[in-house]
Structures are given as C-alpha cells and as structure tokens.
Amino acid sequence: MKSPGWFRRMTRAQLGWALFGLIVLGGVIALGSGDIYKIYKADESFVAGSMLAFTGFCFGRAFSRRGIDDARAMVHQGERSELAEELAEEFARRLNARQAFPELREARLHIAAEVRKATENYDALAKDPRSYEQVTEIRNRLINLDRSLAALVRLELAMTSGAGSSYVFDPGDVSHLEAAQRDTREAVQRGLDAFVPLSELVPYTTADALWGAFSVLWSDTLKALRDVESLMVGCFAHPPLGALVTVRGYLSAALARSEELQMIIKERQLQIPPALQTMNTDLANALHRLQDVGLGRLPAGG
Image (cartoon, rainbow, N blue to C red):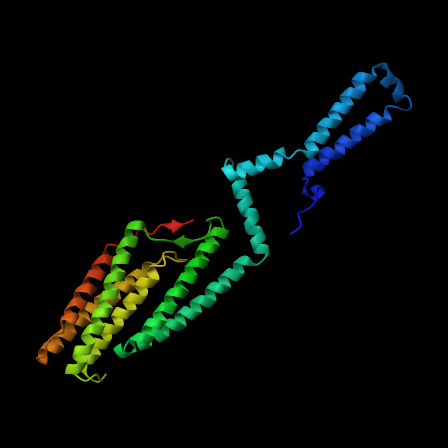
C-alpha cells in the first residue's frame, strides 16, 4: 500500500504554523516597498532579522515531527492513561463503523446453533454403548466448536481493549478441572471394559432392567465428560456456573445409577465386573475434584 504524501501526513496544527510562517514571510517581503520601507530602513537588520527568525520558528514547528513522536512514545510507554483510552475508543468506533461487532455476534450465534444441534445428536447416541465411536466423533466436533466460541470471545475482548465481558477460572480451579477430566475419561473407558463381560452374561436389550440401568449410567457419564471438556476451553462469554452444577449433577446421577446396577447384578447372582467397580471409583473422584472448584471465585475478565 502506498503511503500518503508528506502534506497529507501533516496535522492541523502543523498546517496552521506553516500558514502563519508564510504570512510573516510575506510581511518581510512587503517591507521592501512603500512607506513601510522607511521604517524598515531605520533599523533593517533588527526588523528583518526578527521577522525572518520568527518565520524560521513557524516553519520549524510546521515540519517538526516532535509532537507525533511524543504521542507515539506516550502510547507505547503508557504514560497517559487518558490517551490510551482515547485511542481505544477511536479504535472501537472504527470497528463499529465497519460492522465488526455485529459480524462477531452473528458468528457466535451460528456456532452456538451448531453446538445445540451436535449436542442433541450426542445425547441421543449416548444412551447406547454400541454407538461409542459415533459419540466420540461428535464429542471431538463439540470440542472444536467450543474452542471456536472461546476464540471469538477472546477476539472480541481484544478488540474492545478488555472492556467486553469474559469469565475464566482461577489457576487452582483449572488443575481441579483437569483432574476431573482425566477421572471422567477413565470412567468412560472402564464403562466400555465392563460392557463386554456383561453383554456376554446377559444379552443386550433395552427392555432389560439391567441394561436400562447401564444405559443411564453410560449416558450420564458421557454427558459429564462432554461438559467437563467444554469447561476446559477456559474462556466464556457468560459465567459457567450453571455448567459446573450440571456436570456435578451428571456425576452424582451416574454414581446413583452405578449402585442400582450393581444391586441388579447381585440379585441375579452374577459377578460384578471389576471394571464397573473401578468406574464407580473414577466417578466419585471426578465429583470430588469438582467439589473443590470455587463457584464463587470466577473472576470477570476485562
């Protein structure tokens, strides 16, 4: 892109000084004619010298870049907070004029709609352990969508110089979330390990109370994993307190269903798969980790 010429880069103040200098210079030239010439002749060196010196001063102010350089220094060094605020406001006005924020909001709405659609498919397939591969594919898609939403939130925050709303977890809470995510993933894997020996003992059918309990246990565990991974994106447009409560609810329901399933297995005098007991431990650990996440300590970013 071609840079603007020197004249277009001059500020109004610089143009004013240049014009004033030309006027004074014209006055010096005018001294050489008419009656003014007599006054000039009386002490020509003083009059002409003074006016030429003032002309040089005006031109110096007109073509000096000191004001621009000082402004740049203040911007980079952050010496004047009011200047930074003025620049941020001007930047936001230009973005608004170019419809940047409406475009961002529309993008967020489209991604949120895709999240809802994918979540509906996920919940429908999560009831059947045999659909695990499809569920995993949808969950990976949801993770990418959640990351895209978080990226848009961070972008909007950057465009507004931190004036927008965003919510993040404390670093200590992030470690608890990571641990809960690991435990929930392990619980899902143990659920798969328990499904195989159980299906060999009891043929899989949704009409069977045993498989009914297992399906609910499996579904709640997968939903908990999906929501924990969603929380791990780390940046939200709205407080994620409701999502935390929902995850804890899924884990509690899964634990209750696990106890019910083990009771049904015992009543039928079948052997409880060791993987199911391990799954129960993993679920309890994940729930304990989330209990340590401070719901009231979610600082607003910006």
